[in-house]
Image (cartoon, rainbow, N blue to C red; front, top):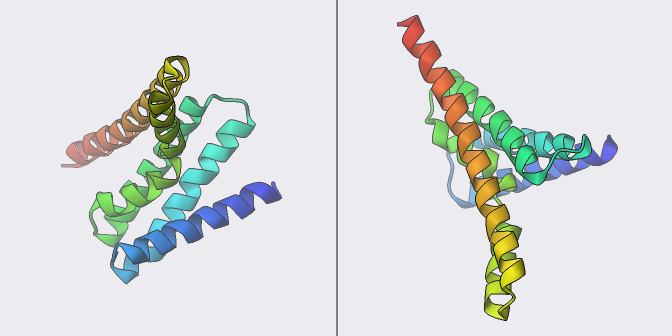
Length: 144
């Protein structure tokens, strides 16, 4: 439990710092950090209960997308500001690196493995974001 909190705080600080570097408006920095930390916490909890990396990325992106939509409406800001920050810790950078590394090394078996893993994780993240966005659009259209 303590490890989860330490990593979530670390993700918060990393996203906060990243958001500073990309000149995010200061009034959104804490919310972007919260979104990133919560997304990473969802990923860690999913992995601890035994789901695959793909499923963990899905749940992480679901949490980040949900928080992004809520923050965007409450703060009257674009969803993208929070969404990019929220999914950043889950982006499959290591899998992308490994797939290119093994491609260069000529090890096609491992290249194919990591490329497929990267595509699956990215697809799961996209589906999660799409689901949350669609639900919020439905709710907004029903309210109109």
